Image 1 (cartoon, one colour):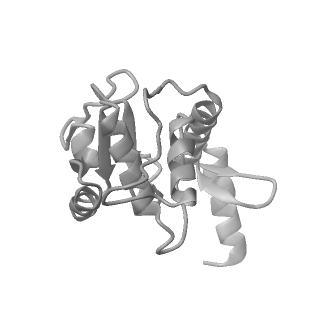
Image 2 (cartoon, one colour):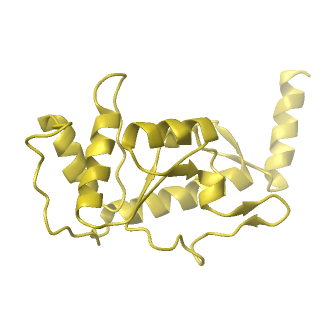
Image 3 (spheres, helix red, strand yellow):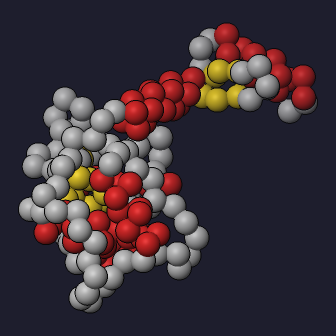
Length: 176
């Protein structure tokens, strides 16, 4: 396909509403671009809203099987203070340890925490590392192939004070 043929085809798909073109020449499938905008708006809304979770005791563990570092505990407290939190970092910096400390703190305060991951293998590993039950995202959202998801904004997850999604960077836009 020649460059001008490709340009003509892209322009035709854009005119038909199937593609979106921005001022910098980027091309996106229109449906996915709309999903991305909705997801970004919801993420902004959650990040800016007041947290709804309060704990009786936010004391940092000072003894026991695991004592979090200052950075790990800071990540735990930041997660408690926001309705949307993203835990990032390179290998070995303590992401899993921070998540374990968060789960332990929530459980100590009698809060319900749900953990999920994109795959069964990742969910099993998450459960192993945190000591809490974990499932796949599809199972958590009651996915039935012929029917779709049983959980969404109008049918939220029951009895969940905090939801932890591991490996969220691996999610498709549609699943996120």
